Length: 122
Image 1: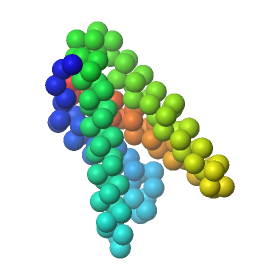
Image 2: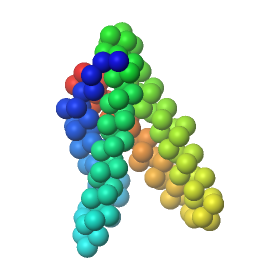
Image 3: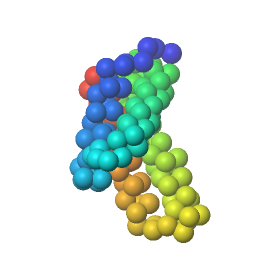
Image 4: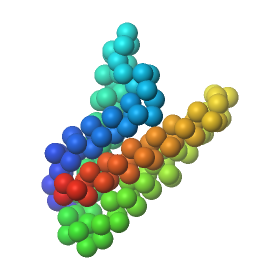
């Protein structure tokens, strides 16, 4: 395992956070619920750090030889873990499937963007 690229983790977190504002608008900006937004920011940072750890496990040499792995791995996480979890939760709570699919699209774009940041900064 190579070292985690912490600069890419921070930059990936920032890009994913900005995408959150683009997707959700004012709902993504801290207002009266500052504590909840801080929690969301921390959890997003944990996600970016875990992606950094995952990519470090693959190793820079492999990723340089196969750069599509940045997108295959990050997009794969969003498509096969995060998205289904959002839909399953919406179904169990009898929530709007449309909202869950919208959230899934955010996470897919955000994870692919984080993968792109790692590609650029590794």
